[in-house]
Length: 599
Image (cartoon, rainbow, N blue to C red; front, top):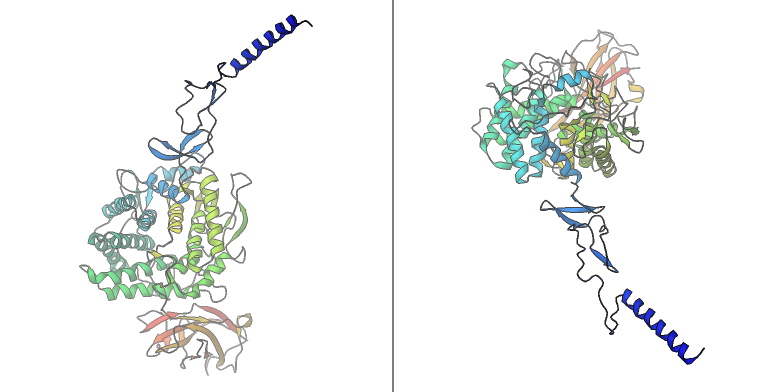
């Protein structure tokens, strides 16, 4: 190649280098040019990055969860979009309760209707029912959290209940959420007690005397002899409702807490009722509940049949177990909780259940409504058991129940991400009714109270050590082998009963054993054993018992019913047909009834 050809080649190379330099933004005079200078790459989206590369704009999404602002509110980025921040589980629960509150009446509509529900239930929901129980629960949940908006919601719902209160002080069981008109004339005892609990909570939070007076008016209805609510038989307590003669454990648990709390408050009110009479009825309700304790399993029975005497044992519900822990407060009722927590059929816990209608990944566990139907989890009962788990210090069940409730809130059929459905499909109660797959106020309110750490019976933090009933004594019967007592003699049969107690040693309290013959010839009355039990320093006790006498002999297999009483002062009467504070002066507590035989 000649010199001239080499020069020509270098000239061509120089042109190529110059062109290449320009294509990369290099200043041929030696400076660097910014290819993105003047580029408008912003897309106005807080959830994307505004980038320019080699003169080209791009807007990739920022990491999910980055803060942004939607409609002026703090929000979060998700896949390049600024979405309103997802509410926490608790916030969702409270949001659902607020959503169900009718803006005109203040009442909460109990369920959210949808076309997949059974026709009969859909027809029932056409009346837009709002339940006194549900409204009381929601008010308690709002008052427990106590934010200004919460107190406003609670005030509105309780104002609505005040508008429904009759001249005699009673509240209807339900009303139309839209019109505020009562749907029925029924005035169930338990519903009245829950209204008292809500009114008292409002009084404690706001200091407004009107709420205390409202509670007192409801109590006046419960205590009114004209309503004939006092059960004159068995272990007393209050009946289900005017005109009904059965007594319910669940109802009397509510009544106990409501009336004792009201009695504590009455000295500061105008006092239509005396604190003493209110407290007496409250403690009478407690003694009835204690009589429904099963010494064998630890379960709390549902209450009595229509006689007001005979315990109804065929169906055992969940709520009498969880509520007894909260209302009665003493360690004796940890056994009721433990029974409910055992796997069916020995208890009431469904292990590895399925949420019908949801994906297979939604595996849940929890309780049914009762032992009559153990096919599906009852959401309200699961929330109640979470409250009870926190009360007894069962952290494992507390955490598991919280996780299942969150899963149901998110993914149950017809869930909205906020409220809770009553059940995934259908839960039969065992009492002729069912719960269905509809968003509902009651389970949502119980879950909110569990999240807030509230014991609704006493309106106190669950973890507080000083339960109001903790100082009350307890007494229990120890079951003999095969539920049979060995007799010494037959005319009469003499035997020995044993048991345990708390809060008795070192006091004036005495333990007495009552024996009621039940077969072959029931006498319908208890016979007080003349000699009180001997109580050891650790609270264990031993007492002599007798069945039959010198005239009426006893044969092997004859039945009897035993109950232990704690009495302060004089012994009970020799014969008792009714075991209450009026028939047994200074009656403190009872053990629960043990059915046994002699051998």
